[in-house]
Image (cartoon, rainbow, N blue to C red):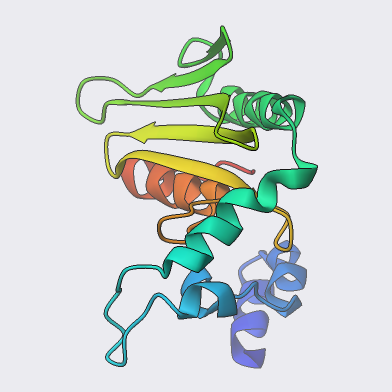
Length: 168
């Protein structure tokens, strides 16, 4: 690590050094709530029904207004990274059109179920359609199916398909 920091400063990239000294966030696969989804060989297995129910009902502190605020936050970051012509927010839906070679992303919110739980739907040309609900302990929108966090999956897919980092 020290060698990497020295080389960064030699090449005039010393401003990156503080970011490297910060402790890294735990990757989703290492998170205790998600680790139960891996079998003994690290192969994903079906989430237990109790985990899916707990995650789906964790939206108790979250409202439709919170989901809409998240959509606005995502739109601002996408418009900053790709431009207003590619990232639009209309009728409660964020759309990112990356052209015919990549496709388009769509993010919308809805409230459904009993009790009423706000959900965010991400439609991606890479991973398809996925629902996310508010996960209060992690303070993020998480998938009740596999435990992925909306922002982490979305940013990772955009980095792979466009080679751009979206700061969410």
